[in-house]
Structures are given as structure tokens and as C-alpha cells.
Image (tube, rainbow, N blue to C red):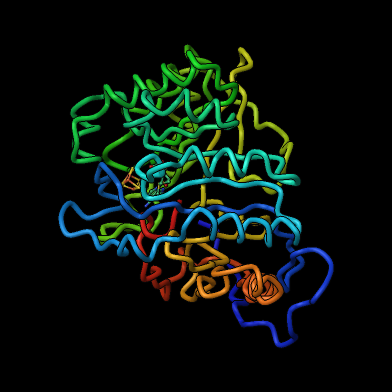
Length: 346
Ligand code: SAM
Ligand code: SF4
């Protein structure tokens, strides 16, 4: 596995006050992930505990007006791409209102939503009508028992119905996110790709990252991109790596002999930190420069009204400027962040 060079020292110079939204390594940030809730209706073991998940009080969640204010400030600094996530974003009441506001916002060129799909059948049309066009639906397995083992819920049928509904409504881009776990999901690699090929959706396998609430992660539970490629090549023959259309995108894509494309988000075995252009806003108003960051900036007080817009812009610049060179999953000294995935927003 790649070892990241340890250069994670905070920058000594202050953040720039003009120009692109850059960190001290020159990475320009254009991509914002917003968590709209930390609650979820299923309990994937690599994310949430089965019982006793700690949620922020509802009163502490950012309002849509606050989220919009943050987006306007980020947009003015160069952010063009937004992904709504959670927790499970479809649990947030009135989400279509936010989608509608963001999809109409000048300068936002790309709006996407990541969902577990359980409630998608009901929400697909209102989301489409509100202007959403890109969906990532999380499906780790097509096996009902394994779905239940992973998510501690019996909801595979609802998720598949959600994908069908989204296709029927006309979503042009639907991708599948599948977390890959060694010793568990090997039998799912080929069936998920077959599902993707048949249904015209791109499957992305995501390596298991140390972001689970119960600290169950270990390196030997990571089913790596190379291991999955070997499984797929045995079945389909050589896969062709696709030259990166967008080198900042986290997935490495491959093309099958018949032209079908799929990808891997190989954060553990092939860290892509040097291409990272993402910043994050948690549901309770903390800004983060990395999923794995151990520090965050509380921007909620700056989102109360319009009068603190300049301070908000400065806080966004300062947080991005503090960004480290990259996560250190592969180092023995690695410490997972205090917030698990559901509370950060994946
Ligand atoms: N609930 C929605 C969902 O599951 O798609 C959105 C939030 S979820 C945190 C976002 C993505 O994070 C999911 O697609 C899931 O695949 C991924 N994820 C969660 N925990 C993970 C982990 N420990 N390692 C890798 N990916 C993870
Ligand atoms: Fe919920 Fe998504 Fe976490 Fe699974 S990965 S528990 S669906 S937030």
C-alpha cells in the first residue's frame, strides 16, 4: 500500500484574501459536500452502530437558509459543484425545497445527491422536478441476506424499487456506490457489475475506510481495487483504465470490452489526496477540509444573517488553507476522526 509522505504541518503563512479557493499545496477547491442530516433509516455496520447512535439535536441542524448562505459564500469563492448527503438526506423534511434553490443558483454547475435509496421511490419525481439530475444510490449487495447483515435492515427491495423509480422518472445519471469489505462482499463484485451493465448505471466500488462508529475497520478488511479488478478480469477479460476526464474526481474508471464503464474509489490502497478539491459542511454547521480531519471550523454563528458574509468567506478560505497534505490511513500513527461517517457526511 502507498505510504503518504508525512508533511502534515499547518501552513505558516496566512490564507490568501483573494484569488481561487486554494490550500497551501495549491489545490484549488471547487467541490462542496453538504450533509443535511446525521440521521439514517438503516444501520450499515461500517458507518453506524447498531444501537445508540449519537445524533445532533434537531435544533442544531443548519436551516436551509443557512445552508444556502454557506453555498453562496463558497460559490463566490469558486465552488461550482455540490453534493447533498448525510446521514440519509431523504430523511430531511422538505429537501426538495433546498434542491430547487441550489439547482437554480447561478454558478452552481453540478448538483448531486447521495442516498441509500430506501425512500427514493417516493422522492424520485419531486427531486427530479426540483431540478436534480445526478444521483448516487448506495447498494453494496444484491443478496437480501447480505444486505440485512450489512445494513441491519431488510430493505434491499425498497432500494431496488427506488432505482427503478429514478430511472422511470428520467434521471440521466445514476451511479451505484458499493462499499467493499474483504471476507464479505467478494461474491457481490460480479453481480453488481452485471446489474450496472443491464440497467445502464455505473457501479463504483468504495474501499472500506476507517470511519465506522464502532471502530471495526482494519486494513485486512479492505477489499482493494486491485483485488476486485482481478475478480472482474477473471470473468470479463482485461479491463481498460480510462484516462481521467477529471483528474480531481475520486473514482478511477475502467472500461469493459463492450464499452461499459465502472470505477473504484480506492482511498486506502491508492490515496488520491493530492488531487482532492473537496470541502465539507456537516449538518450541524462545522466545516471540514477532509473526511479524516481532526479539526473543524464552526461556521454556524457566521450563518445567522447576511451581515457576517465577509467573515464567513474568510473562515472558508482559512479552513481550506489549513488543509493537510493527505490522510494517513496507512500509517501506524493513524487516528480516526472523532466523528464517524454518518455524522460527517460521506
Ligand atoms: N446515506 C447515504 C448513503 O448511504 O449513500 C449518504 C451518506 S453515506 C455516509 C455516503 C457514502 O458513504 C455511502 O455511499 C457509503 O457507501 C459510504 N460509506 C459509509 N461508510 C463508509 C466507510 N466506512 N468506508 C467507505 N465508504 C463508506
Ligand atoms: Fe446510513 Fe449511509 Fe451510513 Fe449506511 S452509509 S448507515 S445508509 S448514512
